[in-house]
Length: 178
Image (cartoon, rainbow, N blue to C red; front, side, top):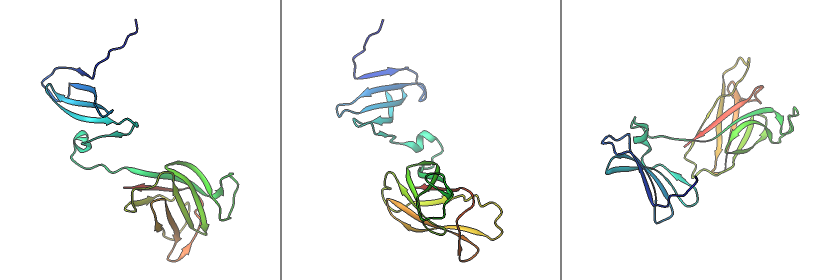
């Protein structure tokens, strides 16, 4: 028999230990909160607001290592040798994205230079880029450097040797952390 329970709070467990009691409650401001802790001493673990946004008030405690957590805000694996149709192309056009998160496009602007456009803007320009160009059999040292960072995109350049820009023969992978 199906039914509804109408209450503002449900508590599961009555143990004296921190890990065995949970409470789910609705709040006057329209949020829902999951709390955990010893009976009578529950701490908020997760809150969902009326729009569906999730917040975790003390994530370092949840991870139990005391270190702050920094998220990957965007990532992309792009085939720099192909345009968005999958055709091999050296034109300055959008490149073929093999997989991504929070990236709408990667535009080739010239040989070895690309602009990665974010789906959702970064809160500011204080983010870092890490990359992993799979460069095949190149013999000279290679590097990828950021040229311009905005909240909406990052422009990067690939170098082989000291000053020679090049298009990578295999996928370029970039991740943005903040």
